[in-house]
Length: 157
Ligand SMILES: Cc1cc2nc3c(=O)[nH]c(=O)nc-3n(C[C@H](O)[C@H](O)[C@H](O)COP(=O)(O)O)c2cc1C
Image (cartoon, rainbow, N blue to C red; front, side, top):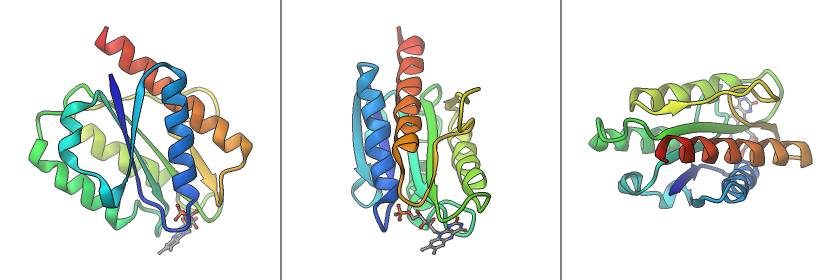
């Protein structure tokens, strides 16, 4: 079972988070497939059981490149029901668009019929960092990857 992690990143912050999320997926015993959005291909979605999207916060929203990836996925509309979805982001500040960005990503995943799990622990909707992720952020990303992988296993066992 595999989980695709697709992220956009101009200055490396979201990229570091993507690798930390992937580490959590691995910790739970599943294989992460990490792709920068420029190299991502929506067709890979047919070979995975989960999709985690990561984006920098741009004007309170996901980046245009991540939105383009989502829009490209329309060709698979109806074929992604029941995949597990998740989202994370990096912002320049606190209360400056992290949650709106994550929710926008989760909304799109839900339109595909994906299953989205929140958490009662820190970062309820998905991991968010301010600037470069610190050790705490990395741990939140690890746990998020682990949580999503565990749900994938549960739903596919
Ligand atoms: C075009 C643009 C718009 C941005 N808009 C926001 C914003 O609305 N809120 C915010 O907190 N940060 C904003 N930022 C800052 C980035 O989200 C932040 O620097 C982030 O950590 C960059 O991630 P990256 O290193 O993965 O590219 C913006 C940056 C750019 C380039």
